[in-house]
Length: 313
Image (cartoon, rainbow, N blue to C red; front, side, top):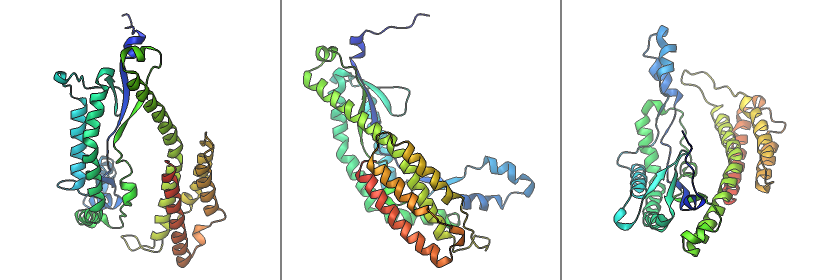
């Protein structure tokens, strides 16, 4: 079967875009829930049942809340953006293989932009409402988790809202003279600038992932330090294992190795965390030292998070 061939002019008549539609995670692995459920299963069946349990539960409510409204708004936007409106000359968007990837006809691009602009203030209001109601949402989530929420720590608002940016990126364009032949010069120029910004964004995202993993690991270690002074549900004293703290050294090395652009912010983050774990033996820390270490690490973690966020990472 012959492979379909495209002329350059045909390829230049479409724009590849990537939608950024706000999304929040409302469920999380919940070990307490699994343990509670397994108590009601015969011992000889627990291994089998454990494999079947989806170990997660919602930790913030969605029905009738700002979070549910945000999700509904995201779905509404995608329907409007992708649906054709031939009476207005709009052919809609066509899905491509990767997540949130689409193509739009060049002569429909300005109409697509107008759809995005019409939804921007609505998304801004929806995101702000979640921020305003965060404490209420956490309280409702804690009530809903009931006994399964013992020891559960809610994410910070900043982390919870991390993926609530709305917009789109132009992912790729061809840059020969066919652009000028098929579009107004200012439209072609604007699309090229968008494509350049999208490339910058992807580079920053690629550099940000290793440092995000590192900071998440630091946050996990802080939780372990804070929990080490307590007891498990069965009444046993919580042990503080060093493996996770030792693993920070490997993550530090990973951040440095993947800093392809030699960004000073990544170097700062790596060196700071390296200094935190240098010579640290968490097993030998007494309760007061663990508490003090958790406090210092929290301050450092928050400062680093703010710096990385300010740098666009």
